Length: 406
Image (cartoon, rainbow, N blue to C red; front, side):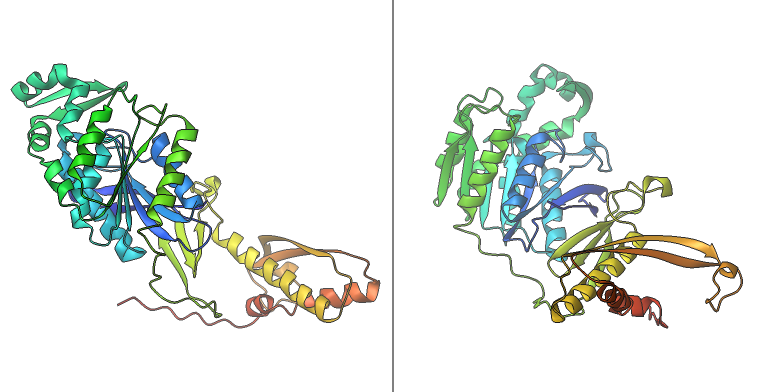
């Protein structure tokens, strides 16, 4: 499944790193995923569930909360309320660039945050919690021995899952002010609660309280034998399968922002992801591609380079044009393979070129034809190759009109 990486501006003005897992075709719906406390978007459960949902047609956005992973800001300055606000910002970004999320999913404390954010995301129809606490203050149990010192000194370094985080008094004050069950009672959206009966981090009684507080339609699914972090890939895949099937009852196919009937030419949109120096997200109708530069050129090699795309376009056009001719003439052409390479040569080394000084671009194209073709048929197909539309465009005068967007 393709992954589009980008950044958006969070509630505190920081750039937050995000990853949108996309299905191969048009998404049936968009989902927003909130990760567990201090975990990050690339935690195993977050990534596996997002990828598995994309494989089932649901485009899923996950991102690092402030100060975590690749996001800017200081984690010490974040609170439960700021995380909720960042979830709303993430939904706003999806609404502006794709479609608003119809499904909201939260894992552990992220599940509590999703429940709190749901009322501010009008388009969301289905909400899912995975191993979520019924009270956000439950998270203080992870560092209960330090709570008094945090309140006394205002800030303290605590160790969580082998990493050190700074927790401030403001964080403690914020979570005790949350009346989450009242929000659950007024949710007004379909709710799926997923929890493992043997979860020793957030007990199953939390799921019971959420279920009792919620109004119908509500559902509960037991994640038997799963641990709190869903560290086994089978548990993550199962969760995704259940979510996709359950949500389909409440969420219809995502409405496209513009009707794409496949007419040619189609608009190509290229947008910076801000993930790495050069990475670009490319959309052409329902198709999603990535562009980047090789590592030797300062990129991260996460997609084709601009010249790769140029050569790919010429190669594809060459092969398609030869196929059309061969089929029309009933030639025994089984398969065409086009291999291309771009480089620079001195103009003086090109006898037929008008340019005589400096260097010029040269594309080397090698065409392989499989099938019982005679010499005359092969020569004709090679002649046809030079008549492909992209070849003609590259070898004719081209006018590029550039203007600034309004």
